[in-house]
Image 1 (cartoon, helix red, strand yellow):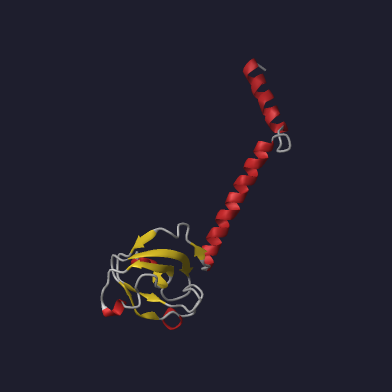
Image 2: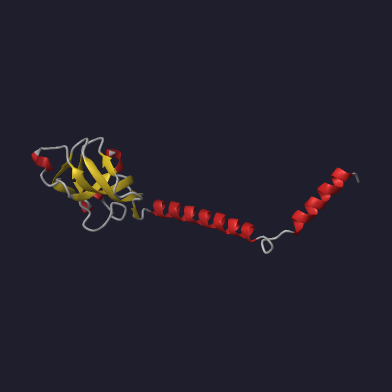
Amino acid sequence: MNDAQNTESQEQSLDDGMDTHNHPSIAAKFVLKQSLCIGAIGCLVATALGTAYACDEPHLHQTTLSAGFLRDCAGQTPASVASINSDCPNVQQGLIGSGSTVTFLQGVNRTLSGQKGLWYEVRVVHNQSTQKASSNAREGAIGWLRANKF
């Protein structure tokens, strides 16, 4: 065996003898990687099941790209009701105009049939619409909007 092969076999035998008990930093990295993996899986499962989640930056303002009516789910979420049309009716005169500013409070992923996808509970900051249909969607009003409005 030449010197290069000898050194290589010594290094390999040293690596084989290492375990997490002798190297706490290796153990910590392993635990961190496993925790991140489990956390990511948990988030995906929660989103897939349609559970509500608090938005990361609730103070950020969002601008609507299209008009839509606020919906009132009476203490429930669009993800938890059987029918959007019967269980989350439009807020009477709750029209939000295009270009309006809202704040996201929470979001859900509706997986049940009918109007699937992301929904956001929003608080109106400024409504661009001045129509009579918007009289109940003034600053401070809260309701649900579908993500396709943003």
